[in-house]
Length: 499
Image (cartoon, rainbow, N blue to C red; front, side, top):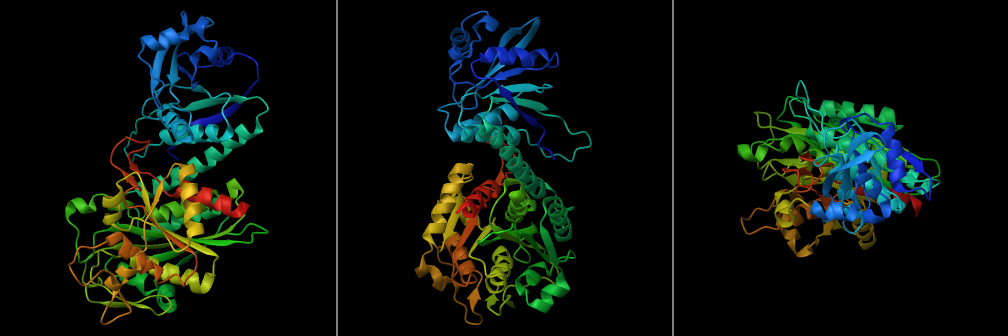
């Protein structure tokens, strides 16, 4: 797992100056290790004797502002050892700023040193968890280079107030969640030359074995026998056969059943409606929704979620060939509904439709949420910082928005405009996958309306994460696949089980 930090929580006795804790940690550290202090008010940390001047004066001379994620190195002497002390700004100490501060320490701003000790004393458990999650995820790097460069610290000892069980539990939860997000990023970042539908199914099976989940993989013969025409049609142009992955989490006593559905297109060329080259370059991450579902499922037991969850990942490779689906084809989905295919590059909704219809008619859940890099229109509307949320139920929408804000993966609720439904009309099938007309389109809304047709009227939400699933810069804590959706799904499912 390319989350590079070993994170441990060390009880720090109350009433002992922070500097004394740092000095003790320093004494056992490697000679080239840095020591970190993440406190808002340096004057309260008792660091003056170690700096040779008042801490406030030292920070002022370094033009430190204390903004979230700012890292200010200064010289420090602990015993007979000279150290670099890194002050990490916490901003306004909000959850978002604590997460940003941790990410800076774990990744972009941290030096490549053997060990760091991060002190977060007197913070509530939620802030400790956010800092620890940011720290762990900030250390994430994906590389297939023969000699991958190391980055960031290899170990962090997080000092928490002695006896603060909530803080210790927060650190443990942060490790579990960060591990899940790292898995989602690994799956999405893997090049499609390796990442076939069968490979993804194998990774899901390994995850299930390690996480206490049930697993079933339907391959083409079963898909055909049971009527999964959307998945089969999208995968028809590739030599790599499609499949449907089903993961199950069954905690004893669970009274609510939630189904997560993820788009698992391991590479999207657009099919016969071929994308331009620049449009294909990020398409190894077109299964990021499926990755988020697999990753969220992997962490449910570790977090003690008290809700039954089924995870479905409809996975295929969308390629052009003599056997590929064509514009004008009519396909029959699970359950019998038909779709006229007008654009083979609107393939994600075709595989999701099968999985949603199966969930509705066979699994009969209390609630369904699908996650997909579905439309460029969502990315145009919301950019890369937000996911688009569509929901048929206001209570579900509110719960997801709250979970998203707490998890640091924000969503923006979008409208399901019924007046736009006529864009899906087809003269030869129940639906068209895109409009016949060339009028200006609300592409993301129309895609959500298409999916709603397969939900059977159950409480359902659709997360279009086309912008948020991938990052082209290090402006956040990662470059490449972000794992977006994993944290918010885990927050939501935790709350759902608690209710």
